[in-house]
Image (cartoon, rainbow, N blue to C red; front, side, top):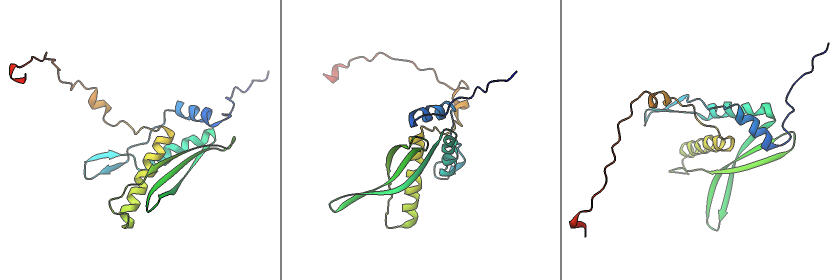
Length: 156
């Protein structure tokens, strides 16, 4: 007696592939520490690792630097492109690059990394790992009392 192979057919388009990917509930691990705020965050590498899980469904991505000029002024963006390889469908989003000093390559590089990280998280709908959810559910809530406001005669 032969068994039938019950495999799910591959997604036909980008929307189906994104749906299948999001059903995995992939999160970007908070693997880096911000020394200024003493908090953890997901590095670009962790976000890329999470996004690469979408290759199981035929989705790959590119991130390029993009420019838009309006007369004398311009804006720089990270252009994130999600590509569903089997169908050739694409979805594009742009994240502005912010830098305190665009003439300083290190500060500009930080702005590019930041835009790539958040642009990729947004394009894939990737949340960061919840590392403080346990604290919120440990009963540390304060009792909130609502007080009915009263009108003061001096206010009129």
